[in-house]
Structure formats: C-alpha cells, structure tokens
Length: 157
Image 1 (tube, rainbow, N blue to C red):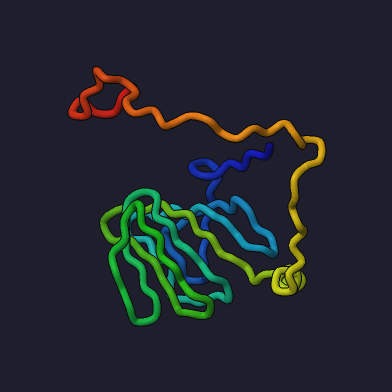
Image 2 (image 1 turned 45 degrees about the vertical axis):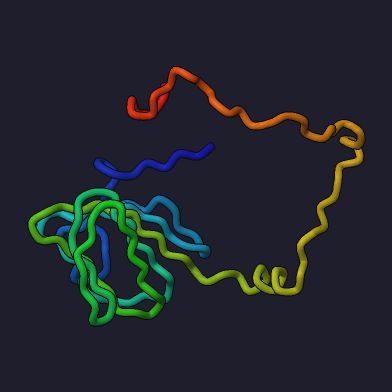
C-alpha cells in the first residue's frame, strides 16, 4: 500500500504562467497521466491556456468559474468539467474559495492499444482445481427483512 499526502501543508504555488492565488500538490504523475489537488483562494486565477491531454477538473469544495473556448459557466462542489485536448481553458474564483482534483489523461501507449485492437485478450475458462466444487444456487430472495421496519423512520441501522 502506498499513501500520498496532499492538501494543507503539502501545497506549493501551482499552475501555468500568470496563475495567481492557486496552490496545489501533485498526487501522481506518469506518462499515463497526472493527478493533482488545486486550492483556489478568493480571487484566484488560472489564466487561459491549453494542453495536449484530456483534463478533468473535479470540484470537491467551494466553487468558482471555468471557461472552455468561448463558453463560461459557474461550477461548484460535486461537478466535474472536461477540458478537451488542445482547447483553451481557464478557471477562477471571485468571492469564494475552491478546491479541485485535476486529472490529466496522457495519450495511451500505442502498443497497448494495438494489443486490444488485435484481440490479444487471453481466454478465461474454468479452473480444473475447482471442478465439481460448485453447486447450482438454491433459494429465493428475502421478502421482508424486518416486519417491524417503517420506511418513514429513515435508513435501518
């Protein structure tokens, strides 16, 4: 198991040139992609820029604004925004703060894609060691778990 720390105490100023009021920490970076956390202060700006990757901005706290090309909208916690490769995009806050996870998906390895397209998956069959151990299922679904349960009381504990 590997644990990567991010958030308060692990952030540094982050973003493309011209970025103001944004700090972040990289959680993972490899040729397959990058995952990072960004923290936007009030009035923070990630200037319009483009990159070659599919990029998701996943807002996990607070809210702000995003732009893709000429389209601009407000975003808040629980929303994810896709910035297509090569598309000019930006993000900023006004009077609130915002935290987001950024996931940049790098281009797939051509060898991996070729293996999938050529049907290189292996055949999966029954395990000879398990032969004769499996029996058909016998039974039915439970009709009523607790006859005293009243759905208006909320979730059962």
